[in-house]
Image 1 (cartoon, one colour):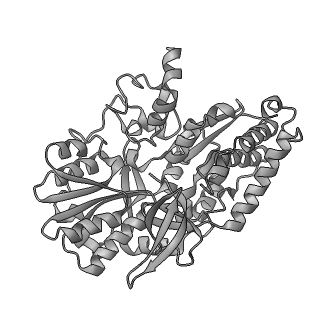
Image 2 (tube, rainbow over the protein chains, first blue to last red):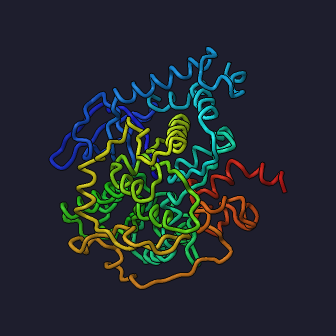
Image 3 (cartoon, chains in turn green, purple):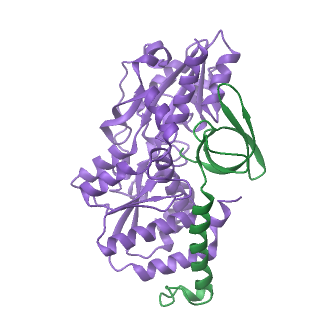
Length: 93
Length: 367
């Protein structure tokens, strides 16, 4: 029920009452209310729940977190991960 | 899809699992609160990948599951009235009331419609001015701002034929109840990422401090959950009880200001009964008196209505992490998603339904 997915804003239509984005989710377009993310612009990703964007994805935070995770994954596959004594290594390599 | 696929990367998942094996020294019981996270854990078999020291139990975070029986009965009574268009999120249609469900009302000729967004319910109301359109407003803090916006917009437009049957629930009071229970065995929590996207996580800091229990706000992809588990285990092994945020790409400490503002304008906190759990003080949201004209319980006079839950269902213990779905003698036999005895088997995100979908064969082969 609390499912929410990130999609990319391709266009924004503003009326006197609301701000609605055309948002792409893996090739599918949907109208999304942008009332709760006044800072969101075309090109941003927004986390969307029941037709409303509830956050703008912070690209720097996502990038930073992901880089750390990715380095862990790479180190692991090189046999340098912290779990090299755990018995998981063979499967990962 | 960006911000989804990379959080399902198998190589990173393996590295995180390896790291967790390295990190864990003692046994820990962790709870993910949100049903969406339960679903991810089961779907990707994360509960079986983590070290045996870690026990994952599943929380009460499925709003479809915990919507009280009497509210379902009220929905059925309203939807059965001639002239009413009853509009709901799809998950609610199969939830059993005392004697029927909304799908059966529809089969018997009731005008029951499924929407993806509450704004679609407004559209239906605008297009059918001669009919009463009632929207079933359920959900946690994640959903409440969207539902609030629909009511707010209806009043702004002066729509006279739109109302909401509102039964919102709030996460922190349920966690407080669980932590106060002498039977509690949960030592660390994955806090619900989308609830916290809206509300922030200051309420969880108060819980962490009061009960000396760590929380990590987690996302919904397998990498998110593995990382959240790893952060929780690190806190527990080091003797810390803080609130940390794994889901930084969506969640801030303060949450979403505009979403909180509309919630507060339209709803007020009230006591709420949770299906399978019982009454929890100050754990719900209802429409403020200023919005009484949009309150379906007042418009349709269904306010007094009570119902008893089936005795055989152990959902109270499942929803509080005291038992697993497979511990129930009725699981997969007398209780299935097609014919559920209780709340957690109803919604796809209920813990029992998640076990039924992903673990049924394993359970049957053990019998």
